[in-house]
Image 1 (tube, helix red, strand yellow):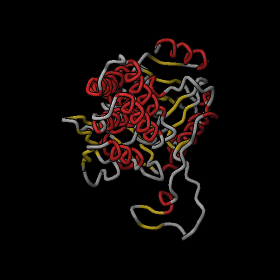
Image 2 (cartoon, one colour):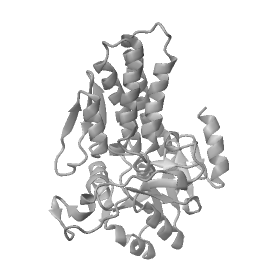
Image 3 (cartoon, helix red, strand yellow):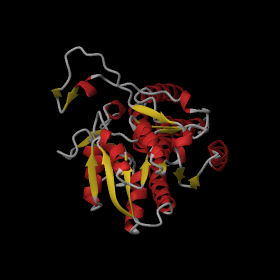
Image 4 (cartoon, helix red, strand yellow):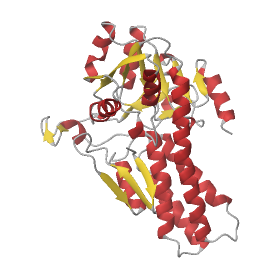
Length: 347
């Protein structure tokens, strides 16, 4: 089951807002529907968002194939800008769009729109295929951190649903479990949209990996009672100093892990690193609709008119991060040096 599929000039997305109650796919034949799916979280997870945006640009390009090349370039730039507005925090979105637009810029002057569309499609396919390879490499590197059987805790969803392949944090969990070094996963429910309860628990059960679902405010008690020996999460953006933006609640888990002497690992591909910002203070934090907090399953659970603060992400300061797992290996503090070296490997 894949979150993002490209076939016959159609982008098919697994509608993650309906899981686990219903498995339904969305067929996107135009970039506007793909953008809507990203904004609505029908497709979510930083790598999956990036791949979806890349294919959305292909759909946008196909819709304007009849324009002159200068008009085509301008119109597609407008589409790219609109796609960038859908989710502000996950840097993979911007990384994928910039990579796609770079293909357009490199085309020879005499190239026509059909050649441009073909080149854009090949780049989008490459982004998706690379994500699969990157996931597999991260899983291998990350599994080396687990040398004896332990239980781990994870927050939000960083599995196959959040990527094109096996996932980031859950990819590592899959690999370490297959080696006998992870015995159980504790999954935070992850309020307010319950990605842990709806998606992570479902994914792990599908894979036959033992999973126990807990509410977000149970994590500290689980740690205190020595029920977990490590934490592993994904990321949506990582700054040069190692500060990590991830789903709201991750910072709290990191603080609890530090207090209880538990390692806190982050699994993220290099496309999630923002080499242009120095710290988490520079990361834009998306704020979402109040109804995500005031209602649950379509039912109102809060007083009418109550004020709501609903940031979708928080930032975990780098001193709380034990290690960052990438496709190039394991990064450890001092992160500014390790990430600077990583940026050179990506050039």
